[in-house]
Image 1 (cartoon, rainbow, N blue to C red):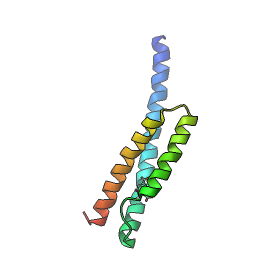
Image 2 (image 1 turned 180 degrees about the vertical axis):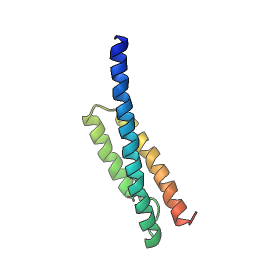
Image 3 (image 1 turned 45 degrees about the horizontal axis):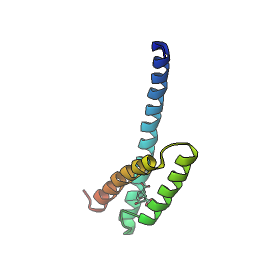
Image 4 (image 1 turned 120 degrees about the vertical axis):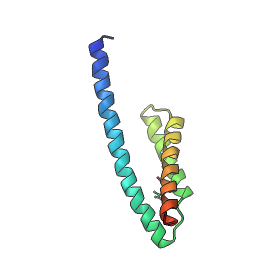
Length: 94
Ligand SMILES: C=C(O[C@@H]1C=C(C(=O)O)C=C[C@H]1O)C(=O)O
């Protein structure tokens, strides 16, 4: 690999990281709206059935994309944990 090749790879990594942050920001925008809806409707912050369906779907997608499904599951669970924390805060009026 040359320095020029490395520079090109890193340019791509920078773009991908930027896309990931923008996608996450959009996801949290939507989940915060869901949190407000749940709080006003008396629904619980977490929905384990929905989570398991999402995780199973993501694992299948990861396998198709040749990405480690365990890593994908851990990543999604990390995000969902943060979403539920937000929902609890909204429910508690914090
Ligand atoms: C966003 C929701 O709330 C929680 C967060 C989820 C997520 O981030 O994917 C999924 C289920 C819920 O535990 C939801 O119920 O749809």
